[in-house]
Image 1 (tube, rainbow, N blue to C red):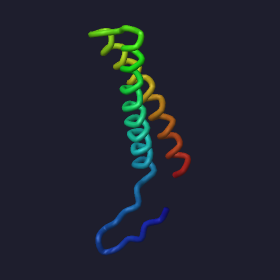
Image 2: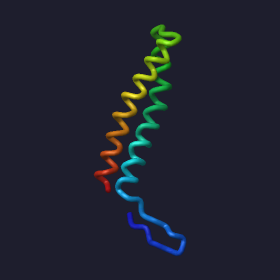
Image 3: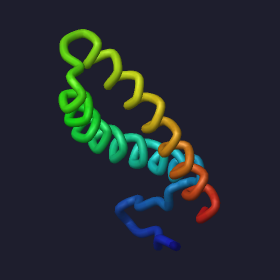
Amino acid sequence: MLVALGPYAQFQPSCFHLLKIGFVMGWAVVMVVRVIFGIFSCLRIGIWGPALMGGIRKTIMQSSSTFGTFMAIRMDILC
């Protein structure tokens, strides 16, 4: 999408900037979803305390990084 340059110094985001936006957007969305569903599923099977936080932390980082990478690739293809 082209952005007209005007007197207020508007700019068109670079491909690297779009790549970063895609990664952060994918990472944040999956992080929120995994926190909600991960806590619910761990409590349902009876995991409490430090084991709960360790398991949630590990699954959040793995799944959110993976989906963030896929979103970054998608944004790079669109660029």
